[in-house]
Length: 460
Image (spheres, rainbow, N blue to C red):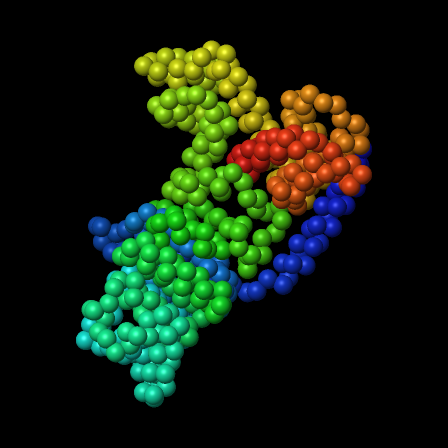
């Protein structure tokens, strides 16, 4: 069996690699700390619109501020633009507080550092398309020939050069928004802000504009910060800040895009919770945990029973229901407040939920100790308990060597040093190739079960 000390040597080597990577991480282009924005300060209708403890945005990131109307995302955006000073706290852009700038320096900041695209286009109807795009260059004292050349080049890039001499009122919504994008770029800002820029567009125009912003992020390497309440747009971002009641309640990293902000292995694991958040974007982490458990208990239940089951599982997870009461509630008739689940099915549900909660707590404790770099025999005991959970339902036999390799793989996956795909591959790979040699179906079943435990344990 692989020794515990050997495993920790591997983990320590991983920590060194993380720290080396961390040293190369770029400095944030935007930071906020203890940020508060209060409307009508001191009045009877005083309202705390923004309350963010800390956040960081890195150069060339595509960040989405996501949430329902009134959650504070536009308030944060306009603070970044330099038009809504925070009531308190620290906001730094490129290491400086723009609200300490002189009027002249603030103008330069809004010309060359930040640009913005509005939902309502904000094109001047009496000016031609080209003049609208070139307008910001007038305030930068650029000669007419230069600003028209720059404006026309941007119109050509976004496929609307044929509209250059027309008035905006004769164009479609999609064309007007691409013109607004061109105008936002004419001063070549480092940071591009978008306030629901596709909120007034049809689906075809929406995709065109969203693809354009993605291209600007990748090709021009602009930092993009986009406000939206539409979950379909989330895959465009490197990271998504989910906002509610003026707060950032969750940060979700997009695993499909290479990250600019270095994510230390073991600090963040893409779990089923993050995957569920794409389906239920407005759900809280606790609500997502409940949905994860209910999904684990998939049965032939009616929609009403599933809703009742979610309520009961939430109460059990939060400690409001003891195990015996949880069982009784599952079995009780629907019209008496229960879920109406058959007796044997209810007993199996309680057993499975209790076991997954126990295992998830083991993972939560293991990860806390791992992040604190605590070495103890308890850590190995937790891995052994997880290994037993996987093997209890396995009808085959394993050798001591296979046990050791399984425990090593479990430890690396739970620590975040191994991805789900790598874990599944190691389970299936033959012994002579350094794997464990499980059948494909067994490797899939084990990895899926472990992911359920990680999803619960990581979010406890």
